[in-house]
Every structure is written in C-alpha cells, then in structure tokens.
Amino acid sequence: MTTFAPPEPKLEFAFEVKLQFHRDPSIENIPIGGSRGFVGVEGGTFEGPNIKGKAIPYSGGDYAHFRSDGVVSFEARYILEEEDGTRILLNNRGYSWFKDEAAAKRWADIKEGKIEGEKAVAPEGYYFRTCPTFEVPAGKHDWLNKTVIVGAGARSLDGNLIRYYKVV
Image (cartoon, rainbow, N blue to C red; front, side, top):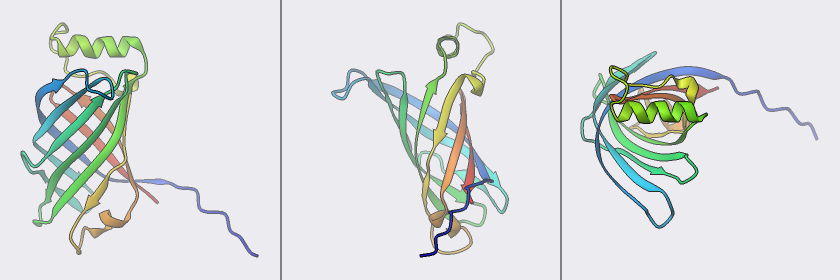
C-alpha cells in the first residue's frame, strides 16, 4: 500500500472584520457556572482580497459564557453583506482568556473607566482565537462554505477586530 504524508497546513489571509457592539446586561450564576453575557452587533465592516462589505446592524450578536476558570467561551452569529449584495451568515465560536493577571487587571480598569483615554489591552496580553463557519449562497463567495478558516482577534471597548485566515 502506498501512503502519502498530508501537506503541512499554511495560513493565507482571507479578510478582517471590524465590529461595533452594544452591550446588554449579563446573567449571573448560571447553572453551568460563571455567567452569560450578550453583545449585539451595531455595525461594522469587513475587507480582504476580493471581498468587502458591511456587518448588518442588529443581525445578531455574541452570547459569551464567562467561565469560572477565567476563559470566555463565545458563540456569535451575525450577517455580513458583501458590496455585491451577497449576504453571508457568519457563525463564530472561540475562546478568549488573559495570559496573566496584569493584563486582566488592566482590562478591568479600562472597563471601569479607571484608565482615562484607554480602550484596549495589547493583544499580547490575551488569547482570542475563533473557528468560524459560513452560510453563503452559491456564487462568487461560496468558497467560504468549503474552506477551513481560523481567526485571531483583538478587542476594545468599541468592539472587535478579527483577522481571518484560510487554512491552505
């Protein structure tokens, strides 16, 4: 039997999404532990090679589970609209957590307004990765339906920036 080694995966930039959110109250002490929060998409943009458009306001949001071990497990769903009118449902799951106490404290201080003028912690201080899937009609952008994509994010009080990469 002849066997071949699989190719080593490589990443190729696909696009980035910049989102603005509105935050709603969280639910504390949920039965599985931790709390549950929600942020709704107010708007945003996305752009990459051969793809560009906007996030449709109020088309979805992110239900985050703030676990007791400090990890945020999130599940987001919202609709993007390409400039050509194609609508894209983005289903995004991932994890975020602080790499050290100093970064976690800085983020808490920023959220509470204790650090004037600051809206973000440097991404080196936390892990923020995603594993999205997409639902796109047949056509120019249906490559999203059949390509493994991963994302790396940065967050601020204003919203998230996530860069997506095709696994090739």
